[in-house]
Amino acid sequence: MKRLVLASGSPRRRELLADAGIEFNLFPPCDSAEADAPRLPDPTSLVCDLARRKAEDVVRRIADQGDPPAWVLAADTIAECNGQVLGKPADRDDARRILLTLSGTEHRVLTGVCLWGTDAPEPAECWHSESVLMMDSLTDDWLEDYLDSDAWRGKAGAFGYQDGLGFVRIIAGSESNVVGLPMDEVREMLRRHAGWNESPEQP
Ligand SMILES: Cc1cn([C@H]2C[C@H](O)[C@@H](COP(=O)(O)OP(=O)(O)OP(=O)(O)O)O2)c(=O)[nH]c1=O
Image (tube, rainbow, N blue to C red):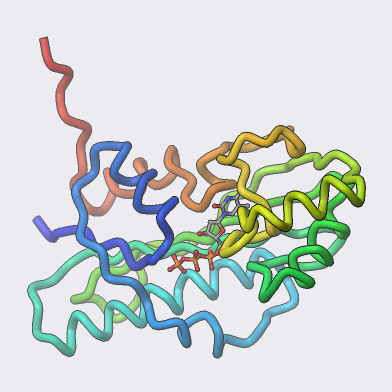
C-alpha cells in the first residue's frame, strides 16, 4: 500500500489528519506553487487549481528524489464574499480590510482538495467543499484588539474559527472544511483510493 503524504505546511491540516488516526508524512509544497498561480476569478475553480498545483509540486519532487510511490494530499482554503476572494492577509492592514469586508455578512469558506498518486500522470481526485458562515458586525475597538492578537496571521479570511472567539458562526457545512480540510469527504476519498480504514474499536 502506498504511504500518504500531506503536502502542506498548515498546522490545522496536520492536526485534522492526525486526529482522524490517519498515518502520513509531511512534505510542504513550495510557496511558489501557490504564489505564482493565476488568480482564477471563479472561487471554486481557484481553490481546486491551487490544491492541484500544491499536489503537483510535491508529486514532482517525490518522483525526482526517486522515492517509492505515494499518495499526495493537498488543499487550499479561501473565504468568499459577494464574489470577492479573500485569502491569507499579507499584513495587518490587509487583515483589517478583509475583516471589514466580512463584518456583518454571510459568506462562504471553500476548500479545494487534491489527491494524486506519484506514479500517475493526473490527479485521482480534485474537488471542493464549502461552508456558509455569518460574521458579527465588528466594532473598531474589537477589531484593533483582534489585530493586536496576531491570531489572523496565515488564515484565509483573517480569522481562525478554531480559536473559538464566537464572532463568526457556521450556518451550513463542516467546521473541518472551514479550518482547512473537510474530513468526512477526505476520509471517504482515502477509503476509495488509498485503502485507508479506521482502526477497529478497542474492546
Ligand atoms: C477560514 C480559516 C482558515 N484557516 C487556515 C487554513 C489554512 O492553513 C489557511 C489558508 O491558507 P492555505 O493557502 O489554504 O494553506 P496554508 O498556506 O496555510 O498551508 P499549505 O498551503 O502549506 O497547505 O487558513 C484556519 O486555520 N481557520 C479558519 O477559520
